[in-house]
Amino acid sequence: MARYAKEHKQATRQRIIETAGHRFKQDGIDGSGVATLMADAGLTNGAFYAHFTSKDDLVANVVADQLHTQAETFSTLPPGRAGLEEFLRDYLSPQHRDNPGAGCPSAALLDEIGRCAGETKHAYTEGAQSIVDEIAGRLAPDDPQSARGKALGLFTMAVGTLQLSRALSDPKLADEVLEKGIENARAFLR
View 1 (tube, rainbow, N blue to C red):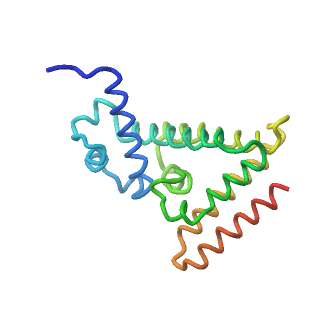
View 2 (cartoon, one colour):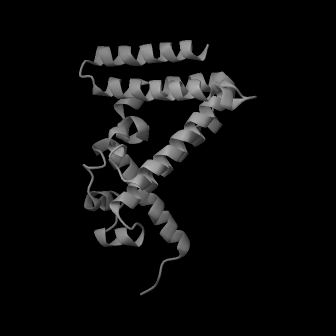
């Protein structure tokens, strides 16, 4: 039996992480079994343990990957507060709200991450800190540390706004929550 090249194994691992991220955000961590996750990736259950020691290991890797990707999106935005406003308009959009599987892991998984093992919480903490650092760097490019408190407030406001909007059954009210969230974020940026 031929062994796969290291690059193939890494590409397969990344495919599992990406498809699991989508599934976790769509159906929840607890609602996503290993068999379903592997089927999503086009692999058998037996292949799982060639890449991860446990589901908890996969969850921690997914959380780290998702937040790293989200933090990287800041590099594609205009500099300063203009880029931050663009991020917030996109983050608090009906499209983001209505597509949790393709969106922010914080808004989709925060309650479950809070019940996860230490490895996942550690991965989440590092990822959340990098996003807060990105926000702070846009609020005060010369002294990001001085804007850390404001960045934390803005991050939590955005995540909470999106979560509330997703939880509402009244589409008009859900849209109003997003609109007010953007309005409050802009006031927060002044």
